Image 1: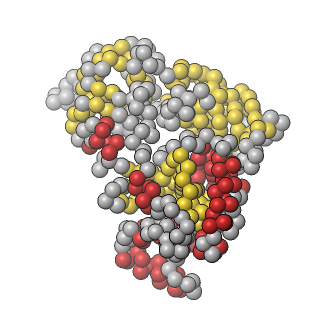
Image 2: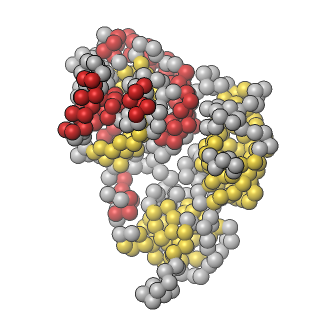
Image 3: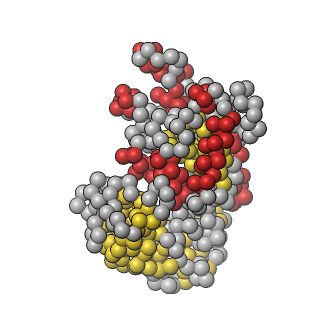
Length: 428
């Protein structure tokens, strides 16, 4: 079902498509957990199951290796690790799900950021034997930095610690202490065994001391209807629709994805950067005309007046406009082997705008383990997280990332290689 097939915001908020990402250190069991969830919810075809059963037997493994359901690359299967983000889709009668299975290795942190950037919920796995490690802290910090609204901490491999309540409570207490420094509000803890299936889809008989819900029950019932910003109206224009035929002779529509707020037919709007105002004449979608548009719908908006509007402009409300800025403070996750260059020039992508920028200043680097700011070390290498000041070649229409994840995020691109080298969250 497409986002545009809903007739009202209430209907959309009742319907649920939950995007969630997995994170955690190497061998914490992320792929096995997803494989178990797909298998136990009967979302696996028989031929898929037979194929991974055959592979498991050929390797001499005990039982069926459910991790093979998500690890699709040959290198992943050979090494038994996850390298790239694997997206999987499944549904239950209550909800539809899109899962991003992300790697645990430190050199693939950029893939974790990619998978988490659109998620409603982050599922962080912790090995019950090892407790909280650096990658746990890194991924929890990135989840809070990316303002993922909901966090589920799955303490996995409980079967290897004899389903000990003490081991579970120790990790839970330690994580709560660390999370107190983070910007996370909704945290849930669930003790699981992905291998044996405890508390994934079915309640565990081995942990009668745990009174909470199973993982699937929590995923089906977590409230995500208010995760988007439905207050501040923002629609970056992606394309001008101008059919040159007699049937649509005077048609001029502005297409894009709604990044915030609710637009209704007849609403008075303003176009940035010109500042001209008009009223919404009509809102079109692939499925026909609609009365209101809200995030994350893709729509075509027609205005009553002929205003010069082009790609990169933004349609907003005149009494609620974003900041128009050239100097921006940004938290950046650096993805590239080549370090961030002070005074370096990069291409910048923000909503539908392509500009260039210069790194004016590196304020500090974040120490992932302590969350302290290191103002002495200004060398920002791959997987580092830092606060920087940039200046763009032309003004951007921005909100703080905390306020709007769409208008508050930017991507850095190396102009020489065209590689994505960093992702940034704008600080308000």
